[in-house]
Length: 303
Image (cartoon, rainbow, N blue to C red):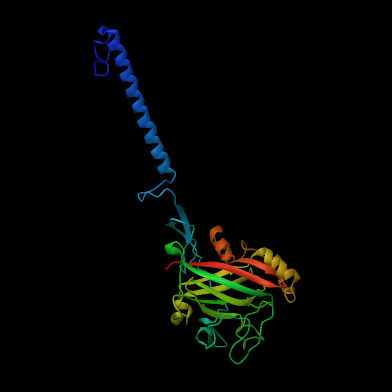
């Protein structure tokens, strides 16, 4: 028999009362031990499931963000105490940016340095031409946020957007509209990190999913060349709206066949986006072909 203090050698010689008391003490000790074991297991379970941290908060969320590095759209993670914050992935500025990175007929094309580029309504050309690009009207509001600080609004940032017309052609580049500069413009974010553009719904041209190009700069003074951009990305038009516009609106007939042959998963830009990134890259749309559409998207940058 074990001769330890838990099992005294004289148990069998004790009186009945002493025997009962010893049994009660042993029972109480076992209950306390079991209680401590259960409490310890509960703590491990809560911690393993992401329970409250050292700040005593009882709730929190892990946020997924994409890298804004120009080398690709790899994912990184950060944390937020309130909401999920996703950074838009870096994308190519494409062959028609007019941001000082390429040339047409031997001359560098840079609309960012031209007087008149800062405007909300980008449907018409500015300068020597005032031609208006026809198409289904879209009022697009973009909210620029800092993905490094739980999507806090970024005011004073410059946003440059551009896209093709309803024929799938780009001003300043495509034949017949090289003297036009419509569907391009810059706005500066307000105190809520927002800019609003009046534009039209872009076409779907062969080989690409319908999209709008976006460049973000820390200030208007730096918005003079793509080399200064803190993010270059693209927005994907929602599939349902594309089907409605291309199938019913005047002037978009060329887009019907092109759109039937492409998707975000086969597009050579959006195919590398994660599902979370593609969600923020796709603006929400409301409205109709006849009344026009109101669209909105959040642009997350890491600064």
